[in-house]
Image (cartoon, rainbow, N blue to C red):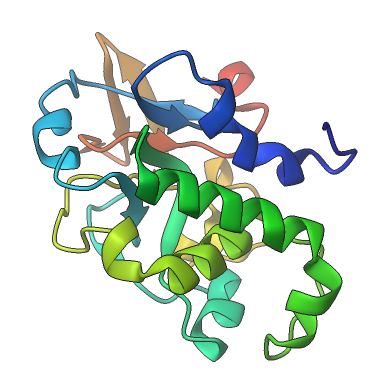
Length: 198
């Protein structure tokens, strides 16, 4: 059943994929290198979410202004912009749990501290991971399975301006450079007009 709130359909990825294993990505991620070797590590789990994120200088970002709800509720710092799953009992349990959270958001929301939001995929899947077991859905030491997140406040800039106002961006020969920093992680460019800017 398709919901009007687009993010509430995210759990269906598990049932819609034609593959036995899937890396699900958001469409505003740019890759600069081959990632096939990631599968060797991701196959250690039935479900694996990217954990934390990176700033454009390659630093791991654990705390951001966007994630106060996560900290208050001790939710795992997963990002649904990129995750892996394969058909398994664990994945079935996880995605059915996420589906139930969406369907019962009014009740779930009352059990979260300072939660007055529409259910975002990141929050719902973090709650599901906490219920199913964080150790079943993440490999926090798998440092390469994450991405550079270009939201301004993650970089330490004012969130009122697009990140492209702060830095120089070069894209050539499958390489992205931001302020002369080569980007080896996938880049979550976030700004919807980024293709026009570059």
